[in-house]
Image (spheres, rainbow, N blue to C red):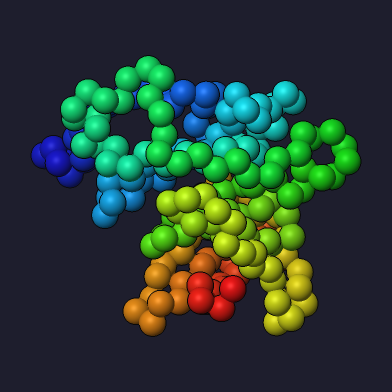
Length: 186
């Protein structure tokens, strides 16, 4: 902090994107595992229509990111440890793009992906990328949820009993949905 209490930072460090990754629309860093997660569009599933609001079609994970960066291993064309292709529909008026991912977070062994509309959350294994399950709004909210419209509209926290609390913003009905999810009940 300077004499006025304003944080002072070192110069930024810039790293290239992994091989086949077009852009980074969302980022999550897990300091407990030194794991960097990036979400965006990849050459395998590009966005031909500039679906600006969507998170992308691809999530990648780089384990030991800062360790690799310090060793000079994060260079042009580096390869991620895990690549997850998530469903993506081009914005073409069909409204299929309502199922596109808007936001994601990582907690414990899971990636939680908030879909743009209807309040659905898909859950993936953070190490393998395999689909684990899906969470949807329940009867207590009449199974209704609207768009999540923040880029980081979902947060999760693992509880001591093994369950996860997941907070999911939604705009249409002006609320934050709180889910309790038990991985072993899938």
